[in-house]
Image 1: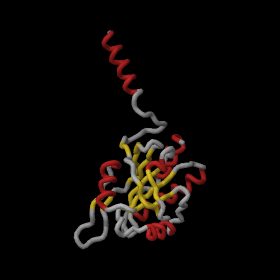
Image 2: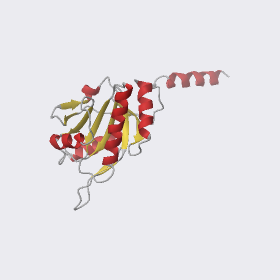
Image 3: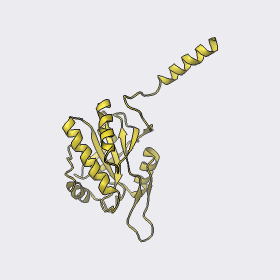
Image 4: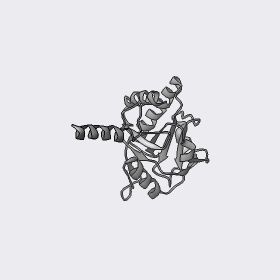
Amino acid sequence: MRRYLVLIGLFFLLAGCGQSYAIETTMSEQVPDFEYTTQDEEQLSLEDLKGDWWIADFVFTNCRTVCMPMTQNMAHLQSMMEEEGIDAKIVSFSVDPDYDTPEILKEYASHYDANFDNWSFVTGYDFETIREFSIKHFKNLVQAPGEGDDQVIHGTSFFLVSPEGEVVKKYDGVEMKNMDTILADLKKVN
């Protein structure tokens, strides 16, 4: 009996050591320090995002498939956040940094009426840096285009990142219905 009490006590002690959130989490990955260039040619760093919840995705502007619905969904989410008064940031990382200059990102974002007050489109790194960043810290596929192709292969998830820089949950970024789930989670954690 005593052994079971010790085990139960140990379980509760260990369970209390992890970060607890008001939502069900599906990930626990730490975002490393970074400093990248925004659509306004300003620097955005992890330090700038500390203290805020933020949503991340990985897209590129000359994508002919999934990036259009992903960016449309993110724009819809941004509108929903504004309507609900939810204070969170959005960061869209380009997976084609050689093509996606700040000017091109700004033009792309304008097609979706992105509000740059809380949505940043970033570039300013090489392909290998963003590939490793995405795979290692977001568990999100990024693969160079095949020979003679310009289409980067990448995952379609949106990611919820805590104010401490921990990726805590991922969502399907192509399905519009998931924007309601993200909004509900943001309401719970904000």
